[in-house]
Length: 268
Image: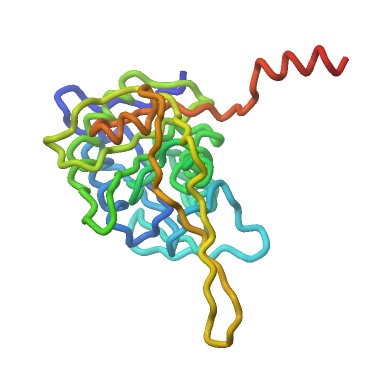
C-alpha cells in the first residue's frame, strides 16, 4: 500500500506531510484556491503547480511539439504553459528535483463533476493519474454544479479535509488513484459519503454544434448534453446526483482480465 503520512490526531496539521496541488482549470481558478485550503488544513507544506490557462478536457496529454514555459508566481507557487500532466512532471522533475518529493498530490477542485465516462477526458483525473504513475498517492477532487447557478465551492471546502483525512488514514495501492466528487448541494445538505464504482451513462452525451463565421466558413464546437438516464445505484453518478459525496478508486491497469483469458485461449 502506498500510504501518505496522516495528519496528527484531532484534526491538527502535520508539517511532515508535503502536498502538491494542481488542476486543469488553470492557476487562477476558484477551485484551485479551494484545493489549497483543503491541503493547508492538513499541512503547511503545500506546493502549487498548475496550468497557466484552462486545460479542461486535456485528458492525459503531454506537450511534445513546443517548449514548456514556467512562471514562478511566489514561493512554492508556479504556473506552467502546458497540460495538467505537464504540470505534474515539471513539479516532480524540475521544481522539486532537489527537494523532498510530495507525500500526496491533490488535483482540483474541478468546476463540474468527473464521473462516469468523464474520467477518460478529464485533465483533473489525468493530473492524479500522472502523480500515481510517478509514485505519489494522488486524489482528484471535483465539485458538481448546475449552470447557470453558482458553484457551491463551500461544499468541497467544508467536507474536503475530512474526506482527505479518512483516505490518508486508510491508504491505497500504488497503482490506484482516488476520484472524489462533491454533490451540487450546500455542505449541510450532503446525504452520505460513499465508496462507489465508476458509472456509465445509457446514452451518448456528446454533440457537434456547427456554426458559420463572418466569412461564411463553417466551424464547430464539441459539447455535452447532460442526459442522466438510468444508472447503477452504486455508481459515482447515482451517489452525486442523490446529494452524496462519491469516492471512487480508479485502477491504472486497464487490462480486462476475463477477455484476456478468453483471447489467450482463442489465439493460441
